[in-house]
Amino acid sequence: MNRSVSTITVFSPSDVTDIEIEYSQPLKRGRTVFGGLVPFGHVWRTGANGNTTIFLSRDLEIAGGLLRSGKYALFTVPGPERWVVIFYSEFTNFGLPRKWDEGKEALAVEVPSYTFERTVEALTISIEQTSHFEGELQIAWDNTGVSVPFEMPMQRNALEEDELVTGGVSINDYYSATKFYYDSGDLPGALLRINAALDMNERKPYFYSRLKSLIEAKLGDREAALKSARQSLRDSKAAGNEYYVRLNEASISLWTRDRNGIFAEGLTR
Image (spheres, rainbow, N blue to C red):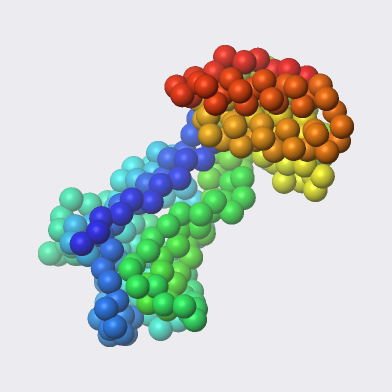
């Protein structure tokens, strides 16, 4: 039985939020899964073998409820149209608890299910980030899926604070805030804001992606820094800005040679 891990790391202004799900992947093998192999209306361990677990390094708001940081077992109660998703504080047992303890339900939420035409042979649980402070826990098997929405309060609060300070955040506000956070050494906060600036600006200016590459380099994410620098290089060539072309070419050369993912290049305007 394949044991899979789904992870995501989300930068917040002062730290990072790590979310990790570990689960075993049962196969469909021609069977009717929901309403058959997995009966409706019964607690399901949402996987096979050992418990499916989820770890959060920070609190999350999940479908309107608050789930504190920590590790939990993930159980569900599938239904024909809606599922109950349960985060259970005891996660060391094998499969379902011998005796269900409602006091160990850290959070239970109800979400609609949906169907799709394709068949998912192996149970798949994934985490997708949908905005700077939002995401979804997605469960799919056979032709059925559920999406459990969540928010990262630290992310949301940081952007709301920007809005209060500026009286409404513009693209230029985010870009200026990015440079302030970068210069002050708050690299996760800088990355959050340059991503917001890029999302808001359809033109995706080459100097935005240049700054993003420098932030990612200082965070030690070599592959992300190279990707952003290459984007800035393409765009600066198209704009005919030789100065930025040279800056990006120099960084790409340096970062390609540096296999350690540790960078010391400063902000260059």
